Image (cartoon, rainbow, N blue to C red; front, side, top):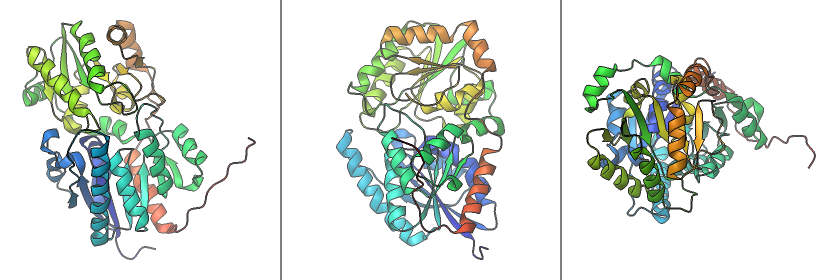
Length: 392
């Protein structure tokens, strides 16, 4: 029995993870037995990416602290420096707030710093979306490292649940809940096509696409070169209107921003570049376009539940479970153009409209809250490695 309210911190570093975490935060905040505290860091505090901490404030949820981790430069070393600032900052925040648990989603470098600070301060970690494989990014290793630091695991699919158990985690602490982003699609008040068009000053026209391209951090080729190949492919579809969003702030992301901004200036009649759509506008856009193009996890996880195809470019998401509506493409302009052409066929549109999404489960945030409260009530203190019985 918990006499005092359970103090739960939610750590968020980007527009993407906050868009997913919002419904979970609202449910936790509404409970009398929970004291919620949100801590924002990284891209949320960066004007170059839309200062999305304002989205948290707009939700009227308890923003307990912010952690600045700004570092000069755009390379790998700058991310290491940023991680060190994040580690120190979250250590200080946790020392002041003294949460019982911290909720972390995903696999970004700042979340490894958050998890490390929490583990060293003996704060239980709830990890959402462990067990995923994304071979083309350093995020893959970071995600698995966070798994080993965490005490409760809320996975997006049953296959991912088995992977987490394979890493030695107690099956009783690993729960397949489905993906928050998929649940959001059917449970958010979305904008109409007309409302969204007016809000972002973009005409979707007869055919359109959402385009998001991030650095594939394990790709030896410069991300600017990869992005230019994608843009060369998009040049071949003159009637396709393009809503393009900024990448995240992984190393070498500036090259991508420069490329898409220049592309937007060259094609103002059919290209709109925005820093951040946020969850509501992004999900609303998915109801207005014919295809999603790029290498974002959203194209793999959320988009199949909107009944449209995804063109997934390059190695960044390689290894993820994917619906039949996801077309995996190579990195060259010819390969990307062929994948886009396939995605726009009536046959592919029909397939996307009826295919199953492996990330869907009913009441994902409710299942997560139930697992969190149940885990807290049992007060687990020691993690034991769960050996599987198999022969080498």
